[in-house]
Length: 334
Image (cartoon, rainbow, N blue to C red; front, side, top):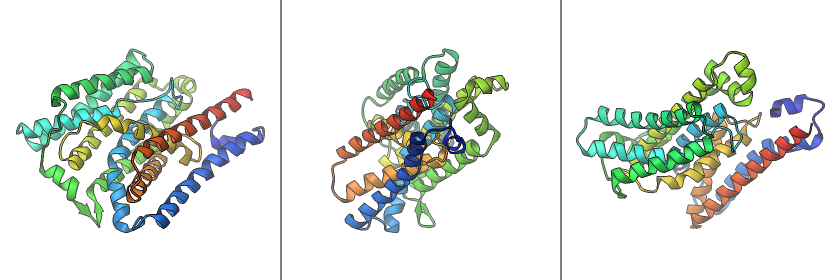
């Protein structure tokens, strides 16, 4: 039962209504409280330049989280058996290494870009086959592929940073339009494209139906396997796009891409509470990206160790999962 159905139904008990209201109002209040707290304590926190930097620095995490959101929508929000892709951060690392290697080897710009995008899509297709064809649980399938992809990256890079430079990376790293960094525009463009595809198209409507009501969608004649497979392809494409942002930000490949996974999962799950229906959605994921981006930026301005950020992210995941579990238990008791 969605949040919209909770408020519409007169039979829903008050505790469940209260939980939904807390999620919908509390998340926005927390966001505003964080902005207000850092605005008071951190210098230049709300300056135009700093806000633009937050958008740019959040591009990699945000694009990966948007891809994960599509997978969660198509597979359902159950953490164990629902849609999940733990290989996204590793996929980014591999794609960045592939692009750096191809660019350093003298490939044409379009060839390096096309092969890098193909690498991301191939990983997405691999995950889709494992989940759809082999019927492996997404949690285990993508955990296995994460380790496989990380191993391939180590073989390719010999566990070193592959520095590279190109016109594309220079444009992404230092370019700007209307005073907004290019990386921020990439994040907003990906979010806008997926918003149109997922929230305002027949494909997105069917993807939601398959994730939330698979039996009804199957009875209506929808191909569950095709749409779930497509969601993993979208996630793979997002990983490749994020890899270009990563290569621009770090001037090449980086060996620490796997560290992004916790942040990506936290953003995708946190984005649920920014939805009116308490379901995974593109605008909610973008808001969650900015929330985490402002949090990290505020810690940096106050010279607070980034290790605290990991603790906050873990706590956010626990809170969202616990909240979802509480709603699920109350729904099961009715």
